[in-house]
Image 1: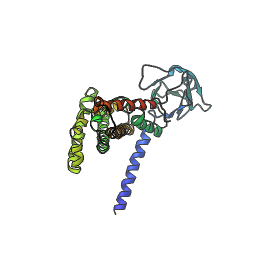
Image 2: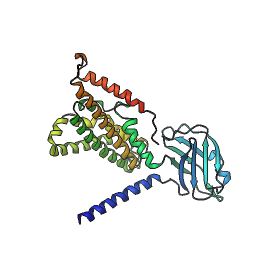
Image 3: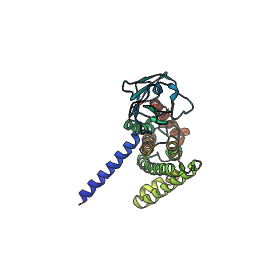
Image 4: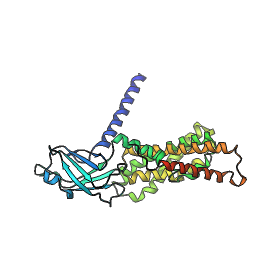
Length: 320
C-alpha cells in the first residue's frame, strides 16, 4: 500500500513540474506558437498561420528591447518572411545579449486581412537552459557574497569552523527558498493585482522573519547543539541583505515560480559555497603564523578580498 502511495505522489509531483515547465515555455498570444533566438543577431517568430506580407516586413510594427533596459530599443536591420508566411526572422544591426531575456512587441498583427491585435512576447534561451543559467549565475557567476558583497555580517560570524559553516549554509538555503517562494506567491497574487508594490520591502521582511522564527523553533527541538553553535547569527539571518535581495530581484525581473526557485536555490547554495571556502581557510589560519595586527577579523577580510578577486574571473561567463 505504501509503495502505491509513493508512486502516486511521485506521479503528482512530476505532473506539477511538467505543468510549470509547459507554462514557462508558452507564448503570450494565441496566434504565436514560438519565439526564439537564432545565431547571434536574430529573433525568430513562428506564427500559427500565415501573416500578411505587407505587415510582416514593416519594421515599425516591431519593438524589441532587453528586459532590464526598456528605454533602449534595438535597431532592426532586415526582416525575412518564410515562403509559407508563418515564420518571421528579425535581424538586428548589433549582436544580441542572449544572456538577458528580451521583450518583443508586435503591433497590429494581420492574417488574411484580419486584425489579430498586439502581442507582447518574451524571448529567452531554451527554457531548461535558462533555468540552469539562473541557478549557476546566482550560485557562482554572480555570487552574492563575493561579487555583490551582501550578507557579510553572518558570513564572517559563522565561517570560523566547517561544521558551523555547513550547518549555517544549509539552514540559510532552506530559509531563503521558503521565504522567496512565499514572497513570489504574495507578489504575483496580492501585491501586483492590487497595486501594492510599494509595500514590497515591508512584506518581504515580514516573510523572512516568519521563516527564520520557524527554523529557530525547529532547530531548538531537533538539533540543540547546532542551535547553540549558531548563537545570535541565526537571528541575524532576518537582517541578511541576501535574503531580502532575492525577493526584490525576482519581483523586479517578473520571474515565474520555477525561475524564482532557481534564483533562491542558487543564492542559498552560493552562500553555502562561500561559507565552506572561507571556513576551510580560516581553520588553516589558526595554525599559521599570522602577524598579531592581522589576527582574527582583519586577516578574514583579506582572505575574503582574495576570494572576491578569484570569483571575478567568472564574470561575463555564459553557460548556454
